[in-house]
Length: 393
Image 1 (cartoon, rainbow, N blue to C red):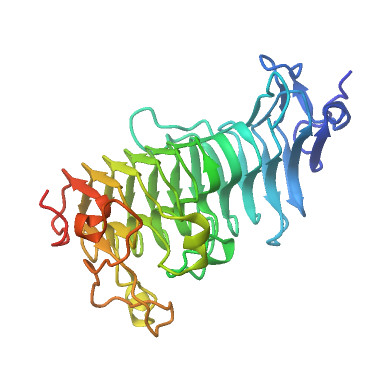
Image 2 (tube, one colour; image 1 turned 180 degrees about the vertical axis):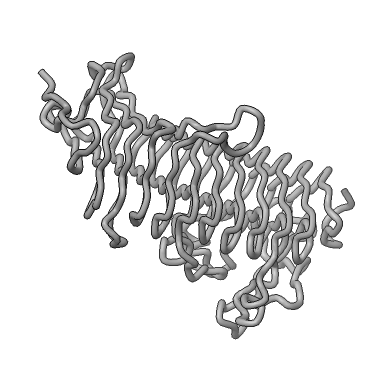
């Protein structure tokens, strides 16, 4: 018999580690815990969180659940997390169903909004996917003003992140332009961060002023990033790096990235990250839009702008990637670029803008080598400026 949920407006932090906890937490408002009728946790307001607002560890779970329409707020420190889902759906037959969402969900003023780790078949749905185009509709779940970022997914597969509004998440980190070290100290979470994630979906979200990156894939494969809208990040809106391969990025609209709109990148040769993760290859960027990317005057003056900036950039030895049918306009450095970071004595360790440093690639992870453009293909793209080493579009 489930405990009664009690006050529908407020609740203490919730921890679910075994099936009995669904009854003991006084947090389940409906459902029977089956795949067809999962337990519903919410609506609840969990405020002044110092630690984790809602934790679900699936190691010993066999029941299905949904976290719906919750409001979670931090206590002003940078150590707390709104929702943590870990070890979900890693064993058991049938697999449990797990989800977070609802357009009544608000998560803010924490370190990270939602963290998913060592899990599969988890759906995070803010309920605001725009049926008419990229981004979200006017009513959506919101993950805002979190110190490190909104959604961090690690060591997982078959994860869906859809229909959220992300605003003002993350800080201006210290980007690693040499080794592309994926740690949070260098890039943060920003809007959505995938690390070691496969066969997952980032779809119809909107990220505004989420730094350092709106959407990032590190060492992640066979993922799909579709119809998201992104603006005003430091450093870029979309990044596919560190051995990330066979990903599809399509139908997204992005602008005003401080340095880059869309980046497919390898670490420089000789770095530990390249040895660990390998090269990024066979990614498809198709039908995306990027506009008015470029640094501020202060960023240029302080020499923190990499010289390989642009709208769509393939960096270093990444190979066999396809950049097809995209559009860019008014991006500093050019619309479409093939470049390599050059070591230099600068605050960021590589050559900085000005001038632009493009068409200088000597590294190759494959694709027939540099003479074959590392097998990278640019076709049908539209921009005022395209690097001279890229075939005419």
